[in-house]
Every structure is written in structure tokens, then in C-alpha cells.
Length: 138
Length: 159
Image (cartoon, rainbow over all chains, first blue to last red; front, side, top):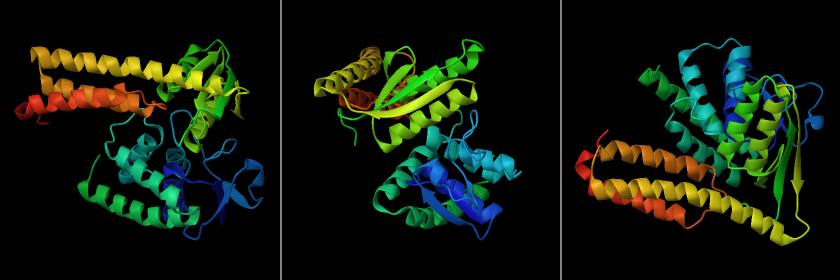
């Protein structure tokens, strides 16, 4: 399946792409567009205004995807809190990891193309998931 | 990197009632460090991140039944942009001065729990820096003041 999001990916889009490929659609292909009108007809858009898989109320896109696909793994929920704070920094959750993650993904997006950012952060989120799982953080 | 030459404007209008979403939008804007240019008109210096932050606020406004549009704009006279930036820098400077004042009070008296106060001040400082688009000299002064507090009470700074 094809998935579309805005070009210039940052932490919420990078994490959402990882979540989609790892837990929703293992053969997901990603397309990056500048304007919502450029989303291909056969693609599911995320983290864009005017679509379902995006910010809603207090939720960032990653948390919306967890909700829509009934992903209730506590490790993913905890990762969602970190992504939320890295994206919004609104202190809704206590996630000290967020500031560092934000810096790392922001730095990557300066030096790498969008597909490269997804490739690198994909491994990063795999590792973060394993680390959170091992720590059994609630 | 932001400049004073290009700005992103959010023009928005929300129903008076219910007031909860209005307050929540107002809090979000305050946290982003916007310049309030008028009723329902706020500005941030333009870059990809500030544009995206205002886009999410616009989305929240629309979800609450309001209307919002985002514009990338250039002042006709460069001074307008510089004045706007100076205004924002002044607001942040006042916030840093409050951090400095509280830090110096603690340094002078040593009373209370300086280690706990230091953590509070560091968190305050981080929140101000997040919305600080045109850092005034007070930013560095506030950081060094907190560092002095940390050095002054080293044995008490344990989590």
C-alpha cells in the first residue's frame, strides 16, 4: 500500500512511518508531498491537515494511528508519549527522552533526504522500542 | 534559522462559547512565543518548524468549529520586522530576568531547598528557551546564574 505525508519529515512523521511499516502494513511505500492536493489518489495520507490520520485534540499523529489501528501495546503507548513530547513539548507527559530525540531527528532532517531519514530513524525506533520493552516502563 | 524578514501569520476566529478550546488555543500560542498583532492575528518568525506549529494550531481551531488561515508574509519596510523581533526579545528578556531574580535570591539567602529550586529554574529556563526566537543577552545570563546556584550547592544537588 502507498502512504503519503508532507515532505521535510520530522519526529512525528518519522515515527508514524515506522509504526505503519512495523505494525500496520509491512510493505508500506512512502510518498512525500508539499501540498495536500498532491497526494496520489491511491495513497493514504497521514500527518496532514484534512485527513483522518493526523493530530486530533491533544493527540499527535503517532497517537492517532495507535488509536485507529487498536494498537494497545504498553510499550507503543509509552513511545507515543515520547513522540508527543518531542513533537509538541506541551508537558502533557513526563518524557525526558523527548528533547534528545527531537534534536536527533531535527539534525537528521537537515543533512539527509526524507527516505534516508526514514531509513535511519526506522532503526532508531526499532532500538528505542526494544529498550523501552526491556525497561518495562509503564 | 529565523530572520526578521519573513514571518508566518495565523489569522483565526473561534466561537465565543465553549470557552475551553479558546483557552487551550490561547495557551498553545503563548507556549509558542507568538507576537500578538491584533485580535485573532498572531505572528512567528518563519521557518519550517514555526510554520508547522501554527498549522497545528490552525487545525485545532478548525476542529473547535473556528476558522483559521496561515500566511507567509514579508513586511514592506524591514524596520517593521525588526520592531516585531525586538518586542518578542523584550518579552523573553523579562521572563529570563525573573529566572535570574529567583536564582539570585536563593544564592543570597541559601534558604529553603536550593537543589529543588534549581530543578524548577532549569525547567523554567528550558520552557522560555523553547519559545525564544530572538535570544536576548539575558538568556545566557540566566543560564550562568543557574549554573552558579548548582556550583554553590553541589552536595545538595542529588535527585
